Length: 227
Length: 249
Image: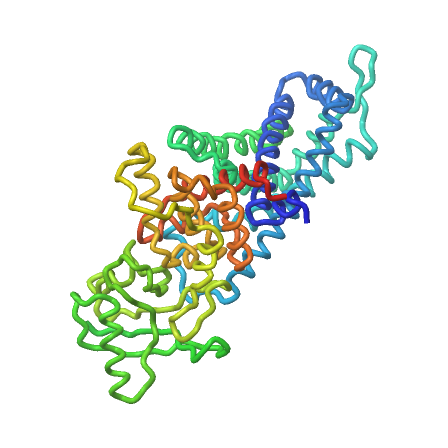
C-alpha cells in the first residue's frame, strides 16, 4: 500500500478529506449565494438570466461544477464510511448518557443534519439544475438575443408556499450543520491557534447564521412578490 | 444517605452482562465514591456475594487507574477522577447508574473493569524518546522557552484514564494520543523520533479500533486533567506534515 492510500485510509486522512471537501462546499455556498441574490433585483430577472447564461458558458465554471459534484459525493461517501466506523467503535452503548452537558447538539448530529441537507440537495437539483440543463425551458429575449428564462422557473417554484417552506426549513438545518462544520474543518486541518481560533469560531458562527438566512430570504421574498 | 445503585455486572468478557440494583444505606457525604463502593463490597462479601469489581490504585487522582461512567458522565458529575469524587455531589435517595467505559478497544474484563492496554500499545508504538546513556545531564542544559515547557507539561498531565474515549460519541482516542504526541513533539528531546512517532502512534490508534474524532469537544469537557483539544489539532499537523515529508514510503 502506498503512503498516499495508507494516509487516506487512516482516520486522520479520512477526516482531512471531510474537512477539505467541506471547506470547498462552504466556498461554493458563498459563490452560489452571490449569484442567486440577483434574483431579488427589480429587473424582472434580466440580470439573473444573463448571469445564468454566462455561468453556463464559462469553461472554468463548468470544470469547477464537475469538481463541486465530485466533492459533494466525496463528502457524503466519507461521512458514511466514518459514521459506520465510529459506530462500530462503540458496539455497546451507555444506558445513561448526558452528552448534552459536554458537547453541542449539532456537533453530535452532523450525520443527521447532513442527510437532511442531502435530501434537500436532491430535490433542489431535480427542481432547478436538471430542469435548466435538460428540461423544456421558457425563453426570453434581451436586445435581440434569446436566453433561457431561468428566472421564470424559479419564480414559478417559489410561488408554491410548501416549496418555500421546505427551502426555509432546509436552510435552518444547513445553518446548524455549518455551526459545527465551519470551525471543525479548521481544527481537523490542524489550524488551531490562540491568535486565530477565536476569530475562526466567530466567523463560523456568523457564517452559519447569515448565509442560510440570505438563502432563505430569496424564496420568501419571491413568494411575497408572487402574491 | 440512602442510595440505590444501578451497577453493571458482567462475569467475564464473553458474558452478556446486565444491570443489578443494590440498596445502600448509611453512606456519609464525606466518603469518596470509591469508599462508598468499598462499603457496598464489604456488605456483599459478608453476604457471600461476589463483590463489584472496579479499577483503582492511588486514590489521589494522579494514576489514571480509576474509571466508571457515573450517571451518564465519565468520572461522574465533577470534572475530576472518580477517586476524587465525593458523595456530597449526590443527593439522599438518589439512584446512581454505574457503567464501565464503553469502547470496542476497551473490552470489559469483569463488571466495571475494562482492559485499557490499547493505550499502552499506542505509547509503545511511539510515545518515547531516545536518550544518551552515561552520566546525568546538567539541569537546564537544553534551553526550552517557558511557554513551550508549559504547553508540554499541560499535555503531559494526561494520566491515561480513558475518560476521553468514554465521553466521545465515537469512542475516539484522539485526545489521549494527541496529548502524548504533543508533549514529546513540543520539546527538543522529542525531535529525533518526531515524524515516525506521529505516524506510528496514529496507526496504532487506528489499529486498536478507536473511532475518528468529530470535534464535538466532549473529551476536553470531561477530561479530569483538562487536556485541551488544541493538542488534537497539533497531532493532526504533526501527522499530516510527517506523512508528506518522512522517509517512510
